[in-house]
Length: 195
Image (cartoon, rainbow, N blue to C red; front, top):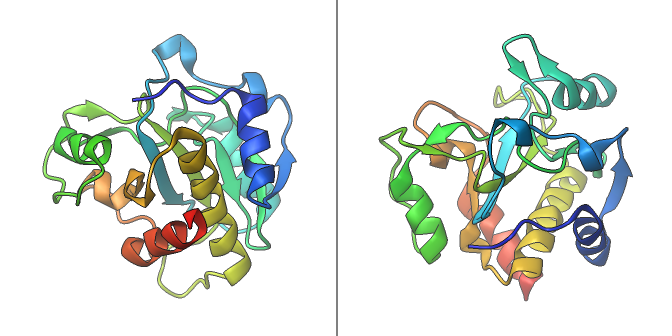
């Protein structure tokens, strides 16, 4: 378990991994902390937005919508590799998931299949939303995948975690299908970057 990175330390970590970061509005103080704690943190969670278009997707992830207020993540990954910072603190991204999965992330061991919704993930995970329709046809450009892997690597390196602290939303709960790419291969990218 770890204390969440400060906004300044998060930026330094991302820049250290060669990420192109865009600070969106008042992201440093934009959060859902009034609903509960953020942290201790244990890992990073990968999502896809089910949207298209950078501006609209970033705006949605910052503001949220009528049934789910923003921020909906900490970072939005654009197709061109830019990373938009939209929140810092508790965010509405993970929701409830399987406590057995959290325990596996903490222990950095292989993940069990999720079959329960007994644990609040918004407390425990950093979240990135990658702009993609998630329909299996919308492409995943290399620039976007590389930036997402560098984002995850930056956080893992800052906390001293391995690639086993990186999970997909679909690995947290059996109610989700995101992201629509292979998480084992994605963790392989993070492992390579961690060196």
